[in-house]
Image 1 (cartoon, rainbow, N blue to C red):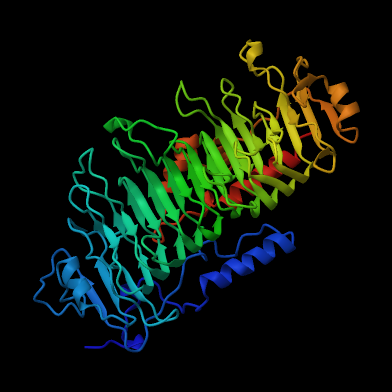
Image 2: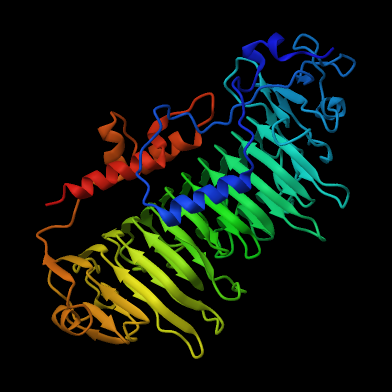
Length: 562
């Protein structure tokens, strides 16, 4: 039985309105124009839920219903006669058609999807795997042990025009040495959407990787919750991507990936919330919450667009560019309007508390970011430009502008180049730094300069018109130029005569997530905020966790500082 668009009950649909057929590469191109050509105004849509993708079936869409109470001898073509297994539901999907396989919300399957080798009809008529029913809980796919929940492997033909929406993926009874990913993509794939997924507890929650000549393009994650990946025997990531052309990650939550102390999977320097490797192109990461990583909140080695994200309690929030094998000639892109809070270390023996670390850049903007509060004992730099110890990396045409740094206890740093490296037209200007000279736990070894310059000619690196607001008695390392510590007066005379230098009577306060929640009539601090973030779904969305709202609130509080 074919069910027409008009005969669908709205309660059975994932979403109801029409989907506009726009290629992801077109979205990336439009984003790049807005980022590099204009200064956009931060404003939320009237409907804060509007980022969810909207779908309608085609006239010949086949709906296939799957329930744990179903029977594989049923037709599966209406909710009163569902099939039981994922394998049977998948078998009923027709390759090349815009069919929908719908799993009953609140149900659970201790199996994996079959290896995916079917496609939708076109970019505007996609094949969808989603959910139906009135229960708010996502249907759960719980592969036994270390199995992969959703596998796209093989050297056969490309799969394309697919959406996976509103599902919960989590392994059942996983042993320490079992390590399949939640989503494993190792075959040619194009125009794939992952939306409103909850993925937790795999070695790698998502692994998107070119393999043996496969071509992966136009992949989008939207509104997903990606948490608690771990491994005791190998590296572990919330998301790993390599060799993808066109990757959009937006409106997601990445939290506590790369470790699980209850299973003796300790945090390491190799595990991250998002690990996007060189060789990936046209990357956009925006409006995400990225928190409590084992090491990096994000390694965005190929550059791209990183904007309007909230980073919370990461040892190293952002790596932009660089990488173990840097892209020849440098990478480009922008890091804009990110709110980075609560820098910390990996462990007591691995101090970090780094904010933004960027290098091997050729045409990049780092602007309007807000960095607030790092752990005193570690004193990692809020923002560093450097070469990552590679002799063929570059820093050219880089603008660091209009960022605000508050109570971050390391130094804003441009490291000197190594031999044969290119440093040209690097500008650090119009930034505001609120620095606490007393934040050293009484140990002068923790005294760090407010800023460090490599001491190059101004045509290479120029500090200009920055605003330095400092509290407490100046120590003997107030600034550093060309590896020489110096006083505020010396820096202002020899390095930055147009800078603004101001003593303040106290450090800014009332800027934490606990205060943000209190202004909305809620409580709970960082943990309460992250509990809200992890509980989000299309069914239960709460706009207070939108990173743009938190950024706007923080920016307003800063504007009110006397």
